[in-house]
Length: 321
Ligand SMILES: [Zn+2]
Image (cartoon, rainbow, N blue to C red; front, side, top):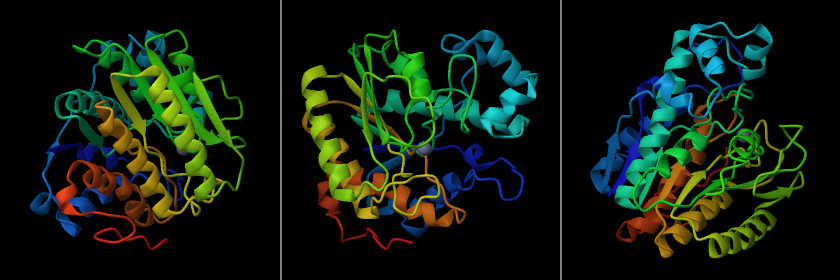
């Protein structure tokens, strides 16, 4: 069974007109899977709805004063600007629920071998400040949580969002049992890129073949050397050739191949995999849905081979918008 984690609150945030954040994509992705593709009628999947994490739980990862200021709307204006969202109760609600969702995805991955979250990947959140649309770092939070579970002594975070995972790298710099691996564009946000345990920085205009060959080589080595008990995977699609904030030239099929490789490597090595959708930016939010959906088709291709999902045919639509 493939457990999927979703909460309607992910898209329940009113933003100013022309705001860059594609807030509706979570609901659109959910509707694409459940209504357009009717995934529950032909695949063995189940949806799970997470609860918000408590502020106290977040204070084990972030500075207590930062969490209190965030929740009480007492952050200085400059710190809110760095986050990039206007403050609202809905913003806090979706943030805490999404962190709960990534934690739940980890729990379900340990139980079922794999789980996918229709949100998550807020890797620019640091110890005492947020940035780049990230308020709290769900990846680091869920990785620390994973280490409290039976049989999980080493976690690897594989961050394939086009932007470097700077918040995750600094928050977990002293966590020897959590390995951070970021593959990203060398000249893109964030300007300052603190060291992850493994950084694979690729130049602008990197194409599908170069991306996949570099990533596959490093990931294969990293898994063989570190042998994690759990992988947390940020399947950001802002590496796409038509992304508004990325500078790579990776196709939709290339994203399917990337996701398929990560999922099959974990499957073949018996490593539970918790994946989040991560970044992806377009003015037309609906155009993102098909690209994010590759993660879900790739998971079914590996874990439910009787569905005969193969790239680039079958139920997968590879038309690049
Ligand atoms: Zn990104």
